[in-house]
Image (cartoon, one colour):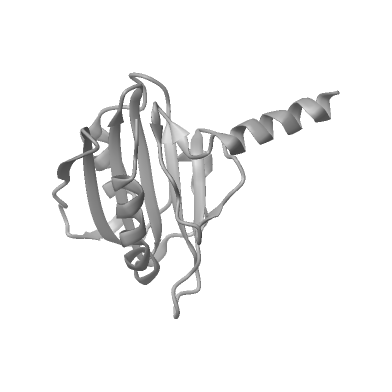
Length: 168
């Protein structure tokens, strides 16, 4: 009985992987949906570009209405995950997508990973982070794309399409 319950939870989570915070999106077909993880609404793996050895990852976070911290604090935390960032002080870009406020940031350098137990291994040089925070009807949804610079640069157009295709 317990196995069925866990299986049902996994199926329910997988079915909801492309929606959070009152938003729905469609990931590119070439991106592989990764297994559910704590604190994440979805995780997508993006194949390494030619010449890169690591794949990129788009992590989508939703913490609930009024949760997850402010826009500026999250941008600052993301930038803080990059050592010797270029640009040194990136300017977030704000725009409207589907009537929603979206704040984006882009920075490259040595990636130190996430916080706490989610941090992965040694710092990785030549990495890039592209983050977008979408202010949805039920709270902010955080999209964080990280990986080798060439792979992330190749995935940026697909991320832009994903964001522009968001519906509420």
